[in-house]
Image 1: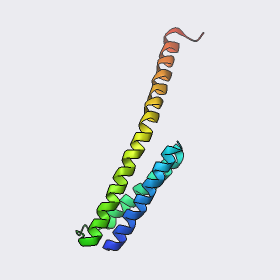
Image 2 (image 1 turned 135 degrees about the vertical axis):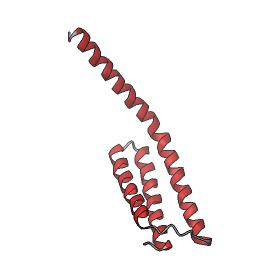
Image 3 (image 1 turned 90 degrees about the vertical axis):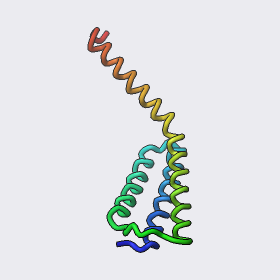
Image 4 (image 1 turned 90 degrees about the horizontal axis):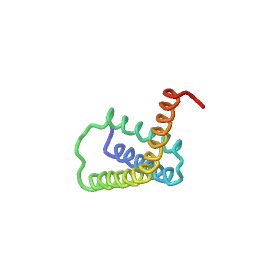
Length: 109
């Protein structure tokens, strides 16, 4: 079981990782974004396995709320940066699929 301080340390590490994810998305460094996301997912798993779920109070609770807000803000920024890339990728996949169907239907030239 984790103490409240240990839980806050994990949340702080996750907040730091999400900020790094924003920077990676800004650079269009998708490979690094994936690596950082995997690190964040590992922290989430740690919390699932070891957090007692005992409610925090006072300053600890406020710190946890602040860290969650930071992560949600970073998540929003990451989505704003990745959505255009995902749309472009979807278009490329659709175009490739359409090209493949034409070749299958009519053969290559």
